[in-house]
Length: 112
Image 1 (cartoon, rainbow, N blue to C red):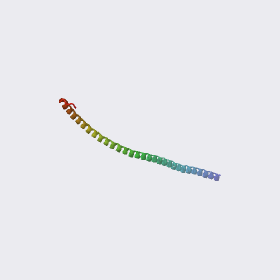
Image 2 (image 1 turned 135 degrees about the vertical axis):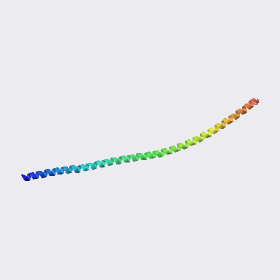
Image 3 (image 1 turned 180 degrees about the horizontal axis):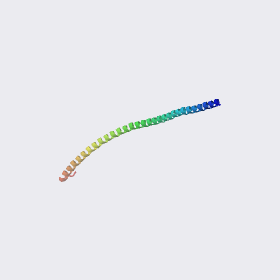
Image 4 (image 1 turned 90 degrees about the horizontal axis):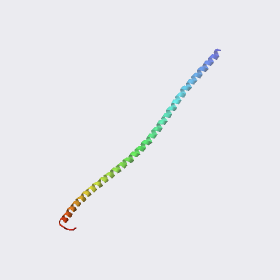
């Protein structure tokens, strides 16, 4: 009977030790799989962010070029405005001069 009890205890101890070892090593494998999944997810996020950053950088370059073009156009238009203003002043001066001559001619009864 002692042999049977010893055999049962050995079998039971071996079963418990095997179960515990299986659980322990299985848990470690599960943690490794979780870490791999987290790393994979992190890499996907990083890749997605890199793509978005590249797009934003390209957009920034395009916007910068557009701003430069618009700034140059504004300078051109400002120059045109200055030219037009000087022409308006010249026209106003000429109109005043003509008006003076017309008045002078009218005052002297000279038809023009």
